[in-house]
Image 1 (tube, helix red, strand yellow):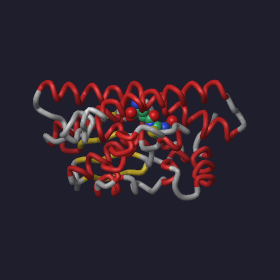
Image 2 (image 1 turned 135 degrees about the vertical axis):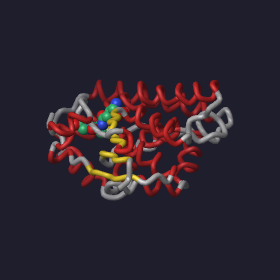
Image 3 (image 1 turned 90 degrees about the vertical axis):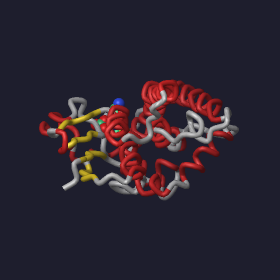
Image 4 (image 1 turned 180 degrees about the vertical axis):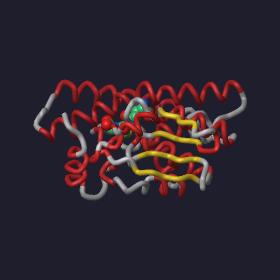
Length: 233
Ligand SMILES: N[C@@H](CCC(=O)N[C@@H](CS)C(=O)NCC(=O)O)C(=O)O
């Protein structure tokens, strides 16, 4: 049995550890946490993740040690495997700076843009000021990413692919779902293409099941309905 057991769902935060595990080719067990059954709020799951959200990693090889918060999971996996987090103190700090930028900025702002646009509005609660605020703030943050990638890339901290790229990609790449334009952000778009081309990322995006609507592909209307049905306002 694999030591690493990941509890996740096909969402922006949920894909992050899947990308790491697929990139590092580490063996792992996978449990699909079903929001439509509120499994993320079940008492036994809350023992692992007191926040009642996904993802959660349990390391069976380390006394069933549970890790919640997607960035903490990426960091734990990086330290355990010695991959995707530079040893050099400055490069390590740069990686963590962009990881925190994603966690404190890109994720929350885009997440709220998505919630108001794709969950609240279809359920009859249209709040234009909130949509405008979170969409504009998300665009501003994507411009910051574009500016960083303009320094040469090909990755967020330069020539090394790190957990900062893995955390940021699922969110920024879901700009369609947030209703945020990436027009004119050429460096960001080139980075999307570079990461889209990675087989491990493509494998991760199929797990635990595909969600093409987040990228504006497939039957978007069906994707909106299916997604919104999982949540109560
Ligand atoms: N800061 C947390 C956020 C986790 C989070 O919000 N996960 C969402 C999916 S992307 C979730 O579990 N939603 C279910 C719910 O809201 O009940 C992390 O990065 O792990």
